[in-house]
Picture 1 (spheres, rainbow, N blue to C red):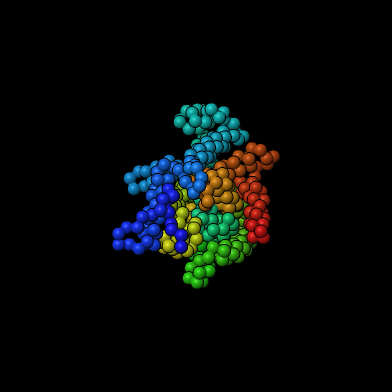
Picture 2: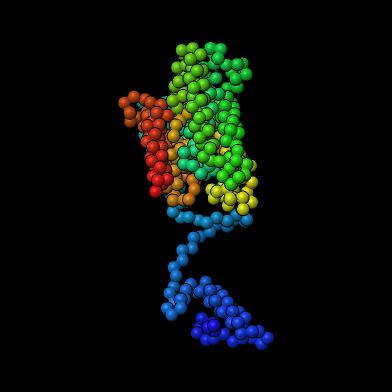
Length: 411
């Protein structure tokens, strides 16, 4: 049996009352522990028979306020600042551009109370509610998509794919096309926002209950893949219901509802903006209050349970907040497709984060809707609903995600 030696090459000395083997093991362990502590303090790593080398460590700055602490990622902060700048620029262009053009430099003056009477009328009564609605709707859909994709671990999980917007559309169409007798008095008195919210919540509850069952670990709960598949089926069924409601409506009501179903900002005003803004604020508060829980849910069921998170309860709370935001956004502008699907994935690639970032997803969703509205009104030969532009861009992006997932599965 060889005698263990210390890291400096000298043999270990046995202490009185110890056997040689016990003393050797104790000395070796103490020496290794001391060497590791020394390496950690000095930044040196020593290998047997090799000269010491210095390791390069990247230490990220941290922000601590009371009991709150967070790692500052400078690259992510700069990216978010750039997204805010792009959003503000598009917002100003969306207000300034139209049949009655207003110089970009005069937009801030008019918003501050200056400008001519005609300029104030055009901005405050027409373009400002439309632009603000585009920001709120896009941010709400991007936020709802980020929450769903983070919890379900599926890049295809979004309000429009899961059937949430279709459920909200059913409720809204009951009101929009309900004068022909296809609706009840209760639904007609609720208004579009409340009807859309009720339709979205009922759809989400139905999908959640249908997806409830045995998970892969043998526990009872909801599996993300099963919920997505059930959501796709429910989405198809609800679209059929919407089509049936349109056949029962009068020609004028059906035309109005059909324009709304394409995702249009033509009828945007402050009465539809306020409920959507409240839904967005509620979802932001829920995501901020459950930020640590949301980060833990991204690790998977086993790790999340070890961290002490009540998985099903937290999933229901966060998904409920996302459903409220998506339903009220749908009530404001109709089902604007593929924003909730694409925004979180684009944000994840821009910030290079392991999960879907909440704030960046909301910003990119707002940029997408405001930019689509600007393109639909100014760059195309005819005015198109904003949903047509987002669908034209989001459809190929969905195909890209499907092809990419298929290639990963076959490797």
